[in-house]
Amino acid sequence: MEFDLGPDAELDHEGPVPVYQQLAAILEARIRRGDWKVGRAIPSEKQVEQEFGVARNTVRRAVRHLAEREVVYVVPRRGTFVKG
Image (cartoon, rainbow, N blue to C red):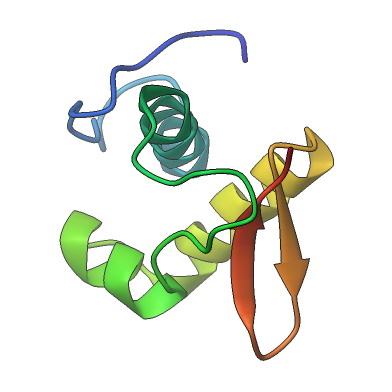
């Protein structure tokens, strides 16, 4: 990632970095911290949406960004899981 946010960072809606990228960085930091182990599901889109107060589309873009970087993988109708 081009920048690094900690696992407990807050989103900056006014900053230069798109919110979905900030969210992806925070989720990745939580994975690195060990909040979710390899093969385990991360919180649902709805849970992330509620925790961060963002739109579902923002969460989906963040997850897609992490999947493209091979940090997570998505199983349709099952969830998003930490990749090993």
